Structure formats: C-alpha cells, structure tokens
Image (cartoon, rainbow, N blue to C red):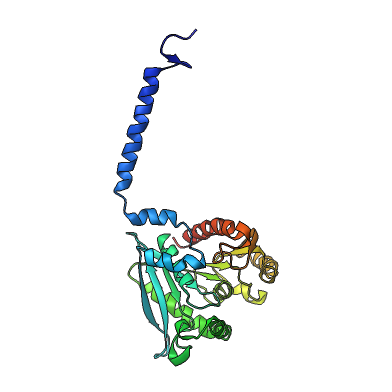
Length: 298
C-alpha cells in the first residue's frame, strides 16, 4: 500500500524537484543559445544547398563573405571569372572547386558554393564561359539558357582543364587555404569533375553528381579518390557507372558510387521533383559529400 504523497514509488516532492531542475536546465540552454550568432542558426537550418528556386534568396541571406575574382590564365591576357566564398573558421581550409552544370555560372551554383563554405571549405565556382560570351562576357552575357548550354557543349576539354588548373593554383595560394584541393561537379560538371581527376594527379578528391564516367582507358591516370552520386532514374548516366567501377577496382583505385532510389537527374537542384524522392536523395547525398571531402582534404 502506498503512503500519502506517493506516486508510483516517487514522492510528490521528489517529482516537483525533478521538474524544477528540468526548467532550470531549459532556461540555461536558452540563455546559452542566445549568445550564438544568428548565422549559426542559419547554418543549422540550411544543412544542404537550396533548390534552384530558392538559390537567390539563400545568397541574399548568407552571412558568409563571397566575392568575384579574376584569375589569370597561362600565356597572359585571358582570365577566368570566379565566385569565391570563404568559411567562417579560424583554421586554414581546403579548397573545393564547384564545376557548373551545363547552365553555366548560375545563382544555384553560387548557392552550392555558399553551402560548401558553411560546411567549412573555401569554395570557388569558376565561370567556364569567361570570355566566350557576346562582347567577351561570360555566362551573364548570353541571351538565354539555350545559348548558354550550346556554348558549354562547345567547350574543349583542354581549355576547360587550363581554366580548372588556374583556379586550383589560385585557391592553393590563398592565405586561408590549407593547400588541399577537390572538385565537385553537377551533370556536365559532374562529368568534368571525373574527367579532370584523370588529368590532374595532385587533386585530393573528386565528387561526381550524376555525370557520365570517362573512357575507361583514361582511368589509370587517376590518383584522387572519387565519390559518385547518382539518382536511380537516370539511365543515360547510370549505364556508364559499372564500366568505370570495374576498371577502377582492377586498377585498385578508389571509386565509390552511391545510388539514390527514385531520384532523377539533377536531383540536388530539383529538390521539389519526383514526388519527394529528389529531396530525400539530396538530404542523404549532401552529408555523404561533405564527409568524403573532409576525409580527403585534411
């Protein structure tokens, strides 16, 4: 038989004491959080890049320092324009080159760079159409998206590599850089990220978002580990995964393809597509990306 003031073996006084303690703990937590900068909450809420329609708003609300840089190409005269975003951290940071989709240097690509900076990297998004637009402009100088996509398709791999090498060297020389470099690319940029790893032996890591794999004959030149991110509903790209995977295994090189069920091509940009599958894939793929980049650019 329970005595007066008892409840399941716990006295009312004891229960009140526990509740009071929990209230004090909650109050202390609120006070502690109030001293954190607003940007901390923004970074927590923005754990992955936005979808395309929210890219501009994300850039406008970012607390991180983003700036445009003109990076000289070998031989003098020509330059590549790039959007550079710095992380808010005390330590020197690795550099991640963000390689554009076939749509050029868009607000969405810049928002990806901003998120990479939020995750602790110096992010550099070069405009690979620099100097190739009307009147010597870049992506912004073209009349419409169709004109941009045609110009990107016409880019020569050797010219792209020269620009990426110049961007990489620029990034390594930044005072805030730790000297480690990686690439992450999307669609056309994913294909380019994988291919660039075959030509730049000092690259530390490469991430491929739904980009086709290079010709298997070139894979013996890769030194960097490669992470592949793919949506299951993307047969054009996915048919190139297994030949690359088999060859990389044969060469004892690191290539890790990740497949996300139900997601389509371009799922990180089109997070509102495929009835939720694209969003789910983005939420799973981005942490994998950041983990991979951190592990390989320490």
